[in-house]
Image (cartoon, rainbow, N blue to C red; front, top):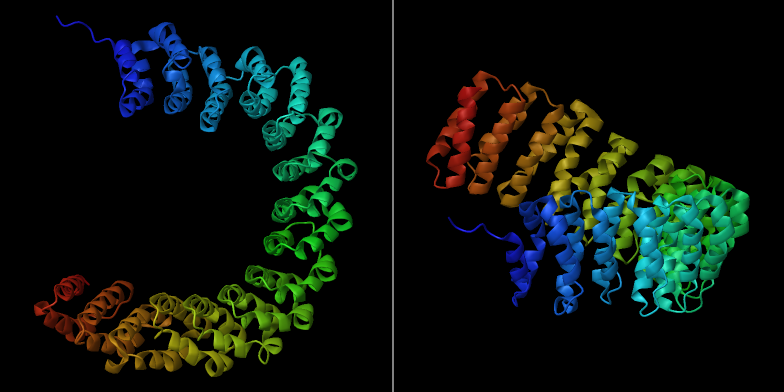
Length: 589
């Protein structure tokens, strides 16, 4: 009888193999070895071995091996019968490694194990965190400790928390810049698990100290993120005393990255601080950000206006008195991205301000942005054309913006033409049939012949909305004949295909009898087109009409079926395929 296969010895041989792929592959399949050995042998034999192997030559210097082991310790916790405490010591060793990715993976695995079994924290994780935080031979252990403090504090016993806060504040004042940076970056997580009184007593002095850090702007950036958490926890008086000053100083920081962080998070800051503090303390810093020397800061300050509008912190009066006066300067900003950001928010701003203020203070700016030389500016303002027109109403719009919108539907950039086409149904409903026919209809119909497929496709999708808006009678008597006129042999086959694609859209408001009398003849004509693409599009459109509408047996047998049967011998294989499908549908109808 053959000897029983020794899984553990096989694993030992594989991880000692000089071939890196074999070695790493063996580590990544550690769960299979543990499963084969069973819980008892895994705890008694496999676990001690992999604890020692990461600390012994030569594998202790193999960074790829150590990274894979750091990942597998979390996996192994499912196979050791609840003895997760055995894995904390080897992970502690990996947390002191020089290579960042090894430490990060070890942190992730340790947090995973602890979250699954929080009872490990008081006896095992808290002492581990203290050891790492006081390790002086190399700073990497202290950097790793910063990431463990939030989870250790969350599950620690009350008597341990004071010492954890003391140890964390020591790391915030560490002599090594990398340690202070790591502590600052984890501060928002740490303060979120602390009680308010402990924050006020122990953490606020450290928070204020780090916000004044001279050497690293990333620490001051981290303090802005910490402020978001603190502002939610504190009442208005506590915020006035402890956090407002930090944000006001950050908005004027000499580093543009710090100011940029304030700008990006301004809406969330206002929401956390509340309307009263926003009005009294934050409007002036926000205006300064919109006037900032750095274009990235100005751009983000403008972009944040839209979410700012949706929050509770900004009233219409504040918008008019503080923010609106900055728009003229921003509209002529030398940086194109800033003007593009302004164009993106001006529609929602107009909606909040209402017709009179928009007409009086924004109309000329909107018109200028629609004519901007930078296509992203035009694209962004056009995407809100429908909203702006709704705010202004037809009376306030006709003589000012309509001519600009007409020119944009013929813009050189296809995305702008596509965006204008998308707005046509909204504009049509505002204008009514007469003004639509005189000002926009011809330009809209020309977009069905656009050289770019995406523009034609967007125009096809809007036809149904226009037909629904203006009703069946107008569609059949006025719009349909103009659509049908676009189907000509001289127009190019792509335009004839587009016309066929429009017919299902326009049929949404037509009766079956109107479809038979007006649309079917064109479809029959298309089945005889000289271009195969047009012929099989005609077959596909006929199939759609048969499925969605009751065209009547007489029409099918005497008009549609004979034309499709002629295509049964078509030289093009695609035409024959769709003709056969359409014929089957005729027979089954």
